[in-house]
Image (tube, rainbow, N blue to C red):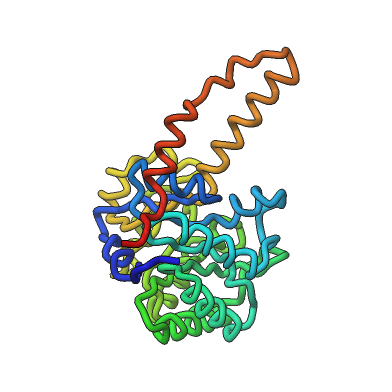
Length: 278
């Protein structure tokens, strides 16, 4: 567990026009390497965590599993950690509020809650989606320390509603008390700018898919406050496994296995680890 309150430092990172990178990790080792390499905050990734468990993405990880995984990352480094908590692991607003309370107890600096109904991956009705964020916000404000609640409108990414609906939802989530707003993978940068224009609060953008070609400077010019990686870094790691395996088990070529030295990894793990108590 962190030996200090990570909330104020995490909130202070959210500066529109000067976005920090929320480095989504999937185990202690990846979190510690990212911390050593310059990350200012760590995020969990629901998809990357599911992959590590040998499961598919989307509603396959339980709340208890997600909390235990998040707490493991909290203990890995001195950085604030934010949880990618899918739909809050519940449909009912009261149960989503309980997820926020438990996340606070686990030492997280914040979590994101999306408006996706699992396992069918449809979107919640707009009114229920709003009630869920309202309950989550009330629970966040009732915690004994600061906690950054991110409200996600995932329908554009999932193909269940359009940008007009997404903008309407984030405006409602803003009014309901969300601290940061997030529409993953809008059609283009104009869509990102439309999200930013719809709220005075910080906006998260996702560096995945076509947005991996957008630089931090371009996100900053759009007044984004935070850039998350989602499962993109984990997928890049899996791409290396895939490509190396095709070469190994096909033509028998091992040349792609040249990697980072063990000494360098050991150094990064040591530098990124949570510092010992003083």
